[in-house]
Structure formats: C-alpha cells, structure tokens
Length: 416
Figure 1 (tube, rainbow, N blue to C red):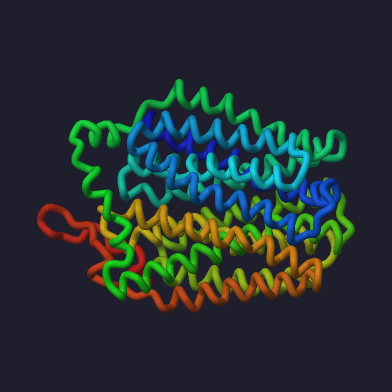
Figure 2 (figure 1 turned 45 degrees about the vertical axis):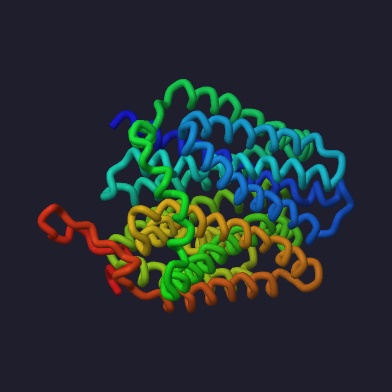
C-alpha cells in the first residue's frame, strides 16, 4: 500500500508541474506577444509546438521506460521538461521560444505517460478508475499554482522570471528517484523477457477490422476535441477577459483559480457519474452541458458572472478529462489497452493542440463570441461521434473469475 501511495504522489506531482508550465504560457502570452512583436495566431503556435513535443516525447520516453525502467526514465523526462521550461526564459526571439517549448513538451509527454503507467501497474483494476481521476486532478493543482505565481512574478519581474521557476522540477526529480522503487510489474517482465515480442505489432490491433478502425477514429476525435477545448479555453481566456472585461493580471488569475476549482470538482463528479450511469450517458450529459456553458459564457458580465461562469465551464468541459483513459481502455482487450490509450490520447493532444492558433485568429479578426461558438461546436461534434460508438465483442472484454462469472461489465456498456 505504501508503494501504491508513492506512485500516486509522484504522478500527481508530475502532472501538477506540467499543468503549471502550460498555464505559464497563458498568463505570459500578452507580454510575450508584445516582447517579440508577433500577432495572436503566432503566439498560439507556442502552445501547439509544445503539444507536438508531448506526442513525440510520449513515444520516445515510453520506449525508453519499457527498456530501462519506469522510475529512472520518469526522472529523466522531468529534468528534460524542467530544462526546456527554464530555457524559455532566455529566448531572444520567437523561433527560440518554439525550440525550447518543444524540448519542454518532449519531457512533459514522457512524464505523463510513464506516471500513468506507474499507477496502472501498482493498483488493482477495480481501483484504477478512481485513482486515475485523482492523478488527473494534479493538472488543476498546477493551474492554481501557476495563477498564484503569475500574479506575484509577472507584475514585478516580468515573463522571463516566471519560466525560470521551471528549474524547480529538477529537485523533485531527484526526490522521486531516491524514494520510489521500480515498478514490480516491469521488473517481473524483465526477468521473463516475454513481453517484447507481443508489443511489436500492437499498433495494428487498433485498425485490425473496419469496426475497430471506426472505433479508434471516433475515440481519437473525442480526445482531440477534449484537448482542443481545454487549450482553446485556458490558453486564451485570461487574455480574453483582460481585454473584454478590463481585468488585471491579478483578477484574471482569480478567474483561473475559480475555473480550476470547477474543473477539479467536475473531474471527481464525472468519476461518480461513470460508476452510476455508465460512460455513454455520462459523456453525453457533460458534452451537451459543455457546449451550452461555453456558448452562454460569452455573454457573462461582471465579476460574479465571470467567476461563477468560469467555474461552471470548467466543471463540465474538463470534468470529462478524468474519464478518457477508462473510456478508451474499455474498448480494447488487455494486451493492447496501454498502446490504445497512449496512442489515441497523445494523438488528441497533438492535433487538439492546434486549437489555440485558430482561437487566436478568431479573436484577432472577430470577437470572443465567435471564438466561444467555435468551441461549443467542437463539443457538439464530439457528442455526435460519441453516439456512433457501439459495443463489440471483438473490442470489449468482460472481467470474469475462474468459473466464468462476470465480475464487471465493460465500462461503456453500463447505463446505456
């Protein structure tokens, strides 16, 4: 039990640092745009480059973790991530910012996947859902931390000083390396040397049949919308509010904290919804509510409206984040679940990471309402795609005991 708790603490801390880093870009965006004399769409590309780095880093560090160990590579990925963040503060032009954000993305993509693997390998299946939701909340802790640090550092020391804080994760990496043992499951696999041959063709299982291919594509679209919606909101909304509502950096930081709290409550609530109503109903409710909340939020006015509305938008739009790992894995048998989850969700992160570019373009050429209509449309698209998902005995596995009795129905088939 002690080891299990350590894996959760390490994974939560890793996601906290990642969430903090992403929001550093959001709060510093206005200053960076002015400093480098670039337009908003060019500024949005900073986040997109980071997300592509995450996709590549997830693959590279994932392979290294399978070969050399979860904990060792986990610490290396955090150091990589910290160096990229700190170097961002030294950039002298936008091209260097892109390069350093890509480096930070490589490390962030690695620590996310390895951290989730550590938790999955340490906890029993009947507790992985709730534990994953606890880990997912870590990103919102990072959002709150970034808001507090931005409010303190930006007005006095500027945006470069904010990124120098990124060196702190190096200290965390050494603490993790010293106090966390290697995954017992990985150690057992190394002794048997029987896993490698099975992993070589796993990617092909995602497209083994036409129906499997359609399911994989549908889940990839849903994951892309989730990331696109989150990035589109969190990267640009503080700047939107500073412009439309005349908020200061400190006031927009308060909005971000309110929204992050809404997201945390939403993720924990979504986990309860999935247990009670099943994935299909839960995602349906939250997707429609997200589309409605995002659209209506463009009409919010006054401090109370901005804060309460932000919390409601965060509750629904990011509450679903905690369920994607369980949703994706419920469609694939055990021997390809990890590959399916990592590939589909990291694809969503890379493509969805392009959203800030379009949002920046819409803000520059139209207004906040048009940008929010775009985001609401994305959630409606995800809802339609979600309805197309169907059960398949080929894709789904039922958990059974030795006598063939069903212990747990596939997650997606519950509460249809």
